[in-house]
Length: 265
Ligand SMILES: [Zn+2]
Image 1: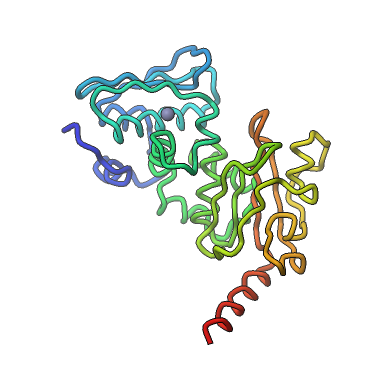
Image 2: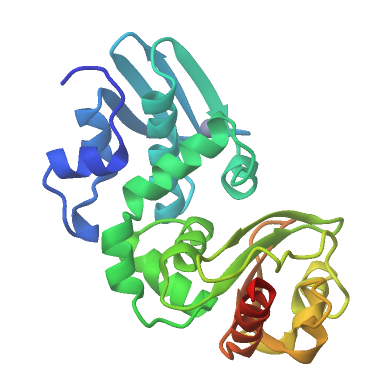
């Protein structure tokens, strides 16, 4: 094939891939001119060397399957987005942190997400699933990819209103809101002590699983204290905690919608 950019859905379509189990990253990369090798790597999770029409991707053989696949797809993203003579070495941090600012790492993560968790397939599998890490883990198993990437897709294409927040002890690093969550709900810059995420970040032993918390622990909107949201927080690296916030009780969102309508009258 020619060496031009192809969107993930185009690649999948050209290869006739319609089911998650058919998303074979090595074969897809090969089709795009890149060979994936698995080797012991130190200090990086994956790297790519490309020149002209050919690239070699090396992925850390010691990583779990979901991470290896995501790393391979991420490097393929570099290949598709920044072709020609390229060399990237990508660390663990890149896969958890680079989901917001527009840069080559975010674009490679986005490419990997669209390739391994295609919207139409993902929506079908996520339909009516709860917005929790238990559900995200199940889906990560079906699509054989990383938990972070899967949780982002669950918020974006799941059936219920939710936000995903990634935080460290100092502050919120990034967040993703689902399409049904209005812009006025903006997560606090710092993690409030009134959240489960705070306890996880400070090493407290906690029962796992979602808990209902007051919405003002997460959002600064002046009426937030009147509502509850369901929080599920998990540690994903030494530094980072991921939080799914799900409006299982949608009253806050409905009331905000009403406010909006009142303003317009
Ligand atoms: Zn990268």
